[in-house]
Image 1: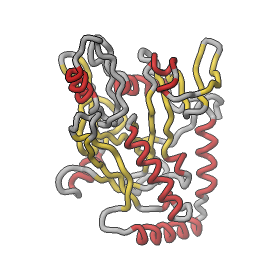
Image 2 (image 1 turned 120 degrees about the vertical axis):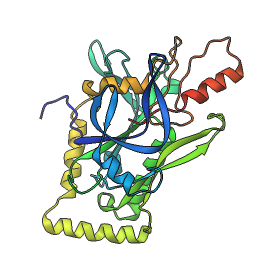
Image 3 (image 1 turned 180 degrees about the horizontal axis):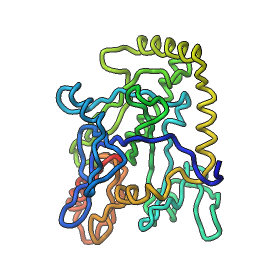
Length: 310
């Protein structure tokens, strides 16, 4: 295994709740209130839709606001990795990644281990617009049990809700998270920071038409079948844990352009920021001119709060 290269779950597609659109010659985030599944291929600046996107829509009346999923791992922290992250805006390379206690920062002398006081208390993070950044891997369908779709987000609401749900479902099922039949759901809310407009975030729950007790019974049955077949879930979790720890940063340079486009869209000369996947309050940093009125600042922030989930 190459040292310094983070080995991440194989990804065959993306889950988004928004997209990047071109307006007045600039590529900007546009929010949505439903899921879209894409491949990892872009054509003419647009992500190509995954075949599952159409099949799920045909099976769902109205908008696609729930996706049936399973998880690769029993350990919640392997399925959802969330850190405070800062990326180089030109190259897309990760510069600093921390958990609120310690961070790994790329410098002229290599990777340094430093204290991480979180973005609000870090001068380096505030200057570079460090943000919470989560990556969730899920499996959809039964064609490839070890491949995944990835949902990326800088939404506090999505990260906090998904983390809680994953740990709770793991606990109540007796550590059978990878066997539980669950679904991702879109929920909406309004806050003062969103100027009372609707914001959307991603939640996790038992599949529609089922109960938690039924899901736990099904998880136990699937776990028993897998063990009979020789499937070693504990070994899979261990292999993933080792792979993630093999590199200083999870995101590669190959993903850099997409990450920067979603993290740091050029929304104006003052470099105002919008965030991917959030459509959420509390995730956007803005640098408005000092002469702006309070209403102008709130209206500007309300526009910037809706970004796509990559």
